[in-house]
Image 1 (cartoon, rainbow, N blue to C red):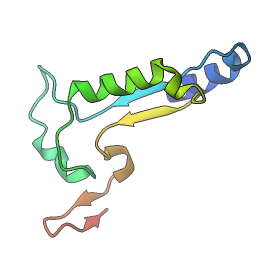
Image 2 (image 1 turned 45 degrees about the vertical axis):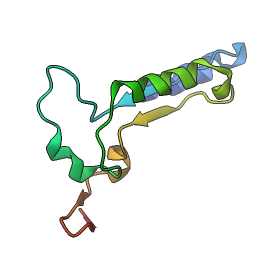
Image 3 (image 1 turned 120 degrees about the horizontal axis):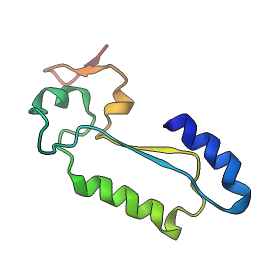
Length: 95
């Protein structure tokens, strides 16, 4: 999806059509298992909410993002930034 987003942004930009992607992660929803185990991979020690995803969508749908195109917004509490690193009980990050 990220590559498609970038390609479409390049193809449609001259028509002032913006194309972006929202990548949600670690958002508790019905039907998912308990997400307590993933908190060690997140920079923010709080659970996400579907409203966090809605906030990103509202941002992209308004003129506040008029100069944003071809990007992926990771709404994930820092899970993407952690890139496989895990927080240890002492608070330090280790691969």
